[in-house]
Length: 233
Image (cartoon, rainbow, N blue to C red; front, side, top):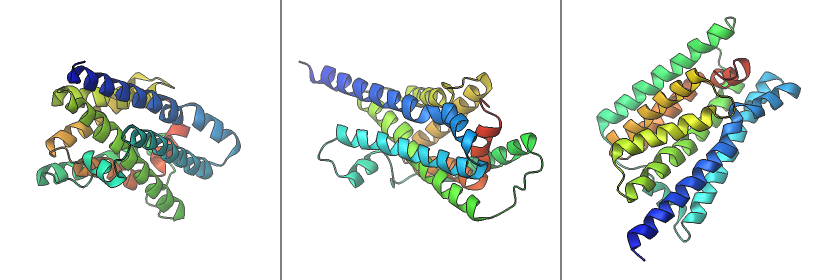
């Protein structure tokens, strides 16, 4: 059998498995899980529980990816995804600007639904949720950019298709359990920007992490509160 066919089949199977896991393990965090948590928990506890759910889901997916690569040390696997790889300085700067702008966008959004929110308040909850969210986004970027896009690269798929496909997957699992056109477009645009940073930054996750983790470091717990206050948006 042609080795190219085998590789394509292997990559296609791996992509399908991970996409299904994203939909089943991460997708519910944007719909049924917040609805369930909000019934018996305070907002603060519910937000922390939701962020822990994200961490668990992405950790399970990363564990599955490790099983797909038996014998490969975790550090080597993560480096193959672009973690710690050298990047273009201009891409890192662009990632930082994106993270700052997206974080501020989340903060202004919460004020539209809860105008009395003190977004300048710094307390233990804000620090805890920021750290949990940053950890979750790191795992998310490893999976949705580092893994998905590099798997497609292995079989010769162009950079543009990689960016668009990963962004579509990103938008899909963010909205499939409570579909809203605005949320889908919002997630798609963000996914395109993060995927573009990955390619522009020489397939390093550094600018992607800056563009994603910085946003949640600035905006949590308010970004997660939005999932409870305005579900579907």
